[in-house]
Length: 395
Length: 244
Image (cartoon, rainbow over all chains, first blue to last red; front, side, top):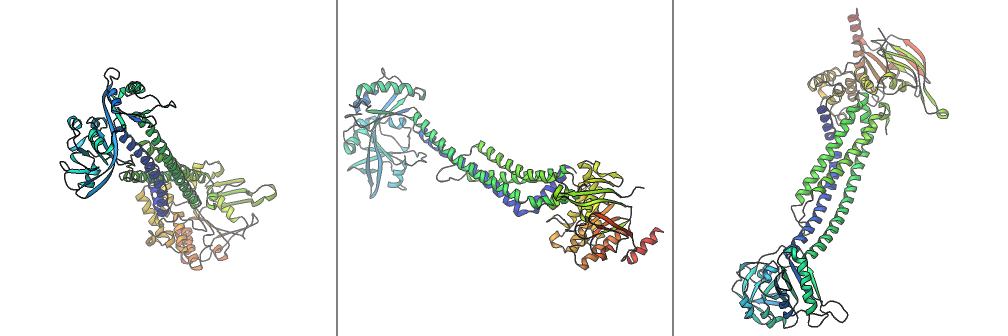
């Protein structure tokens, strides 16, 4: 009896028990699809975080005040950082004040969480270009002109269907003219980065924030490879300019985007591992389901094997047939599982766009196919070794 | 010419020491070509054990069994499969058709295992089904057939390879009198056409159809008599006419 003939027998065997075959394949399908999808969700969220942090610009350092020392970050400190002798790696220094404000326009009202006052270098340092209109200029800053660049969310809230450029909004009792709208940033996070308004720092201090300390200072390095060097350079300057508090704690903190990226990636990695563990459990449960179905049918199949042996089927032929059946069930089920996962990954799941990890496909498919083969093949192999009469009497 | 079956002093022992049961205790038997032998005996007399050994489904504890002149205990697993496939047609009390598989596919099975091409296989299977009068039910699955019809499919499957020996283990045990008559008529025809048949039964009217009656009791052969078979009707006369 040749191999194609045995395959045809196996196909008939699979077709003869449709419900059982479908249930077996369904078990494998769910196991495989769950593993691939869950790992893809973990991976997708990790990538979303990485993209978001990279969007901040990896060659940017943020100097924050710890708020304990009096004085803290001032415009003077910011000017001192822009020193080509002591800190040659610095490309630009951007002072930032941030306040919350309510913007109104023709009766529309929108409360904004970060109304940022800064200098024009902010747009490059924070990697936030405008989409329409223009950014404000150094001259606007020097003259404290009341101009503002707004984020997409603000534009939608206040100017639905109208071009906001050239229109005026009220903030803190003063009129600001909109000069531009920022590009939309992919924000899969918990905070809407597009809910922002950016105006010259001088104007914001006059109207909203007052002349207290700066919220932060953005320092842009020439090159992302120089970030660590620049960090130590500005650290030296800051140590001189802002002495540590009485308890010895530094009055400032430098946030490094690449450090942030590393921490966040690590967190996301943990998240993926956790999801992977849940997925592994579902694969295990799926595997037990496959095992169960395969073992439950052994009684019936053992009798069938007895009949086939009594009719003169050689052991080799029986073994091949049952192995091919088990392979068909697990490979088709696994293949459908992969298809379902690939299809499912095209849609966002709990707000995350899943990104499939190829090795998870190999792992999920490999494990379920092996389980199917083992528990489908092993009982058949045992039955094929029995004497026909023992197989026929098997209960 | 060697006999189809030559059984010499076979014993079959189940269990060990204390719980030992001798299902067969030194049975010797020869069956020649063209004989129609019925084996009778009460439950537990060892008929089924004998039948399973004759059908190469089980092995004796001791003794020799020559099938068509070949010592069975010397055959490898592969050769045994071949012997079951080519030399023996087995009919079970419980029919033992493969479920959810059409009648014709069931009958084709032994031919498939002997490596025959699909078209030829189908032709022979249909011929065999026609012989038992079920050609019109070829596409029915076992559960769509009556008990008698299922057993006739099983008989068609047993004889499709044209085996030297047809073994039937209580073939009518699960059938009503009408279905019994259907199946026995098929056996009569086959024997009339020269087939060797060994049939196990505990029904006297079934035993009466054979031309040799063997009785077993407690694993021993107690009688072996030739008899004038009943129920051959015109077929027997026809067969006799052919022989002369």
